[in-house]
Structures are given as structure tokens and as C-alpha cells.
Amino acid sequence: MTNKAGTTAPVLGTRALNRATLARQLLLRRAAMSAEDAVAHLVGLQAQNVKPPYYALAARLDGFTPGDLSEPMADRRVARLVTMRSTIHTHTADDCLTLRPLVQAARDRELGSFRKGLAGVDLDRLTSLARELVEAEPRTLGRLREALLAEWPDADPLALSVAARCRLPLVQVTPRGLWGRSGQVTLTTAEHWFDRPTRPAQDPDDTVLRYLAAFGPASVKDMQTWAGLTRLRDAFERLRPRLVTFRDPNGTELFDLPDAPRPDPDTPAPPRFLPEFDNLLLSHADRTRVVPPEHKGRTWRKNQAYRVLLVDGFVAGLWKLEDDAALVVELFGRLPGKDRDEIVAEGERMLATMHPTTAYDIRFGTVRG
Image: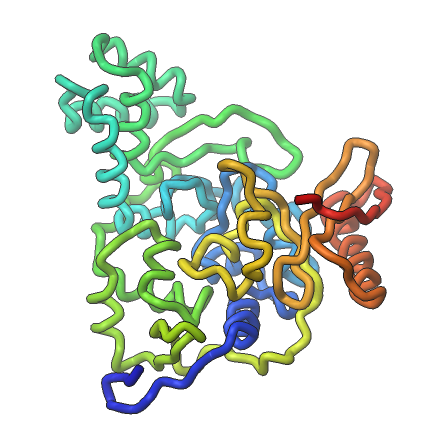
């Protein structure tokens, strides 16, 4: 494959891609940055559940404590809402207000699947009414659905709530999302929560650059997988003069920032305990840079992701916390004693960060199947 200048793009092997991606993801060495800055650098953290963003930052930041994320969330500098891939992410306030308009077209397509249940519903009226309701008082989806059903009693209840979620940038208000706190999912608009307007959707060029800074080198299809969007080729082509290009082992063209880190493939990669749904595993069309082909499909069961363990930069097993105060590490295969010692040390560090008042045992097992 040749680039626009007519020269052959160099090949980046799997380990080179792995180390480059880990460096962008702050997983080769823990970064000395704030939780808020890390959330911005990573362009959000997957947050279908409350705890994963905290574990994700514990694996990436030096000196992190759960309060480092809870505090900006309580202060409305960070929040949870639906963005990429129609999933909940933890974002900075700025990204809540700018990324959601960028992915709105995907939310509109999602809503098309519920057209039958919304027969006779004026979507503009629904949007206006839902906004009035949740800005007057944050509401659970159940309460919002009941209010919308009063207006459209013949509509499908689920479709009404999906329409509100797709048409409006709905933030999950605290205490939901705070470490050690509980609360129902209660919603208001991002504009109301942050007391400032969303920005009009712009071209995706800036987001392409940010994606490459956090996940590159990457193909157009990789970013489309991460964002849940299509037709991003034009943005990459506009940016091509500012980017460098490579090929992966299969010949796929990869784009990257000229000065982004691309460490030596033999750079040490310490073990890391990652939460379920970590974006490291969800943000490329080709996941072999992190998931060895022989382990493909072993980190998921139906639509549920497992917590994963990285060894030498690649997925090597799963982990879980048992009720009897045990961290159970389940490996996909045998590892040298040195690796197991490093896993124990990393597990102890993670537990001291996330569960400092509980004494956990660390046990090893083997994933079957």
C-alpha cells in the first residue's frame, strides 16, 4: 500500500500496535494527571455500570483514589450520559456538551427501530415536553415514561422513553455514579445540569485527532467502531496532510499523529486489572492489538463483559472479587512464576487503592472452555 506521496507506508506489527495503544491509554506506566484530565484525554470512560470508570483510572493514574473521580462528578465537572455506541460514558462537562451533538445522527438512527411504537407521536412535541419535565425536576425513566404516556396513551411505553433518551442529552444526576453511594438512575438535560448550552454539531476533525491521541494508530473503521458512526473517511482525508500513515500486518491503512508515542515493541508492559467494558477492548474494529486471536470471544458472555487482566500488554485472563474477600484471577493458560508474582503485586496495589479497609486474599484459577 502506498500513501498519497507515493511511498510505501511502513508496517506496524501487532506488538508495535499494542505498545503504541497502551502508551496512549496510560497503561504502560501510570500517569501523574488528575482524574478529570485523564477522562478528557481518554475521550470518556465506558460507564454502563457505576464502578468501572474508577477501576479504569486506578489502572492508569499514579496516586489515584476513588474520591478523585467522585469529587469532580459531585461538582458537576464530570458526568454520565449516553454518547458513543449508544452506551453510557463518563465525560467531562465540555465533552458532554460537544460529543453528544456529534453522535446525534446515530441516536436518530437508533430511534428509527422504534418507529412502530411511536405511531402518532409528534417527536418535536415529545422532545419539548420531556425537556420541560426533567428540567423542572430530575426524573427516573419510569416517572418520565408515565408522564409521556399521559400525553400519548396508545404509544409503546418503552419507545417513549427511548425517544426521550435519543432526542435529548440526558445526564444521570448524582449521587448516582459516586463511589460508595447509591441511587436510582435519575435524569436531567446536560444543559440544565451544567447550566450552559450544548454546542452545535461540528465536523468530526477535532474528535478524529483526539481519538488518535487516545487509541491510535488506527484505521477509519477503527474510529467508526469506537464512535458508533459511519462515513468518517472524509474527515481522515481532510486531515491526511497533518497525519502519518502505516499499515497493519493485514495491509489495512492506519493513521496517526506525527508526534504520538510509538514505543519499541519490546517495551515492558506491566500487568493491569481492567474493568468490564473498558474502552481499550471496544474501540477498534480489529482487536488483535490487545486480544490474541486464540482468546477472541472469551472476555464476553452474551452481552456481558468480564473484567480482564492484561499480561505483557495482552488479555491473558479474567478477574473478579468474591464475597469472601478474595480476588480471584483466572488465567487463560499457564504463566511463568515471574508473571504471577507481578500479577500479585499489581493486584495488591489495586486492592489497596480501591478497597483499603478490606483484607483480600488473592487466588489463581484457570478459565475453562
